[in-house]
Image 1: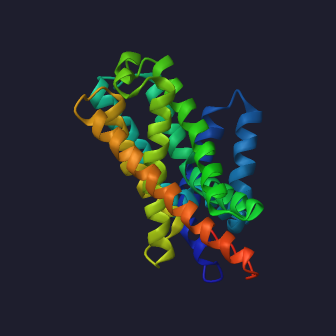
Image 2: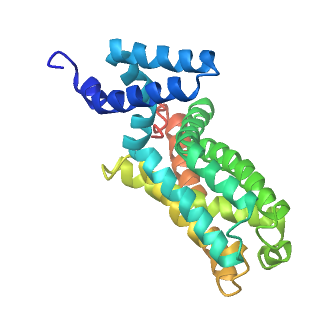
Length: 262
């Protein structure tokens, strides 16, 4: 035991438990020698090589300790709780599936959104190009999620009429989310937080506000649309001003250096 690494030491108790389980399995599966033999071999291999066993347990340990997945679990639970409470859909399978989808994909969604924006900004040499690409990517995702909500009877389609219908609602959701993510990325550039984690927090906040709006809370729908328009003007207005300044510098012969999107 003294020669084991910290990760291996963490598995010692689990190995003892699994050895007990393996013995019980070989006893109870007497009529199924192949199943008992496979389990016995696995337990024997783990006992002989704790490092091998530690690597098999590492993905779950990584999942538990990764802050991004902890935040995405929060987003998934928040999505489920918000829509279930507002629509009395606690047992709706579509909502449960979407909540799990949010948990599993939110960290990747955040990273790919940042990556798509950065690549588009570099390819077009325009900040606005990056923001449009990010917006389109997230619009497609929101159209899919909203379709699942409607098709799965999580929300009443008529609740979207106050926001202009299905496609308009997806657009408002996307722009509000974009605004929150822009502020989150801006804070990260100022040294406050991590870009991906900040974006996940922004998504969590937008999920709550969006749930109120698309679940038919009448008073918040016009407020939501106004907020969306304000965020849209802010995001793309700043981008256009930045691009205009850079294009003017290019015409004057200055070296064109588009700002790196984090």
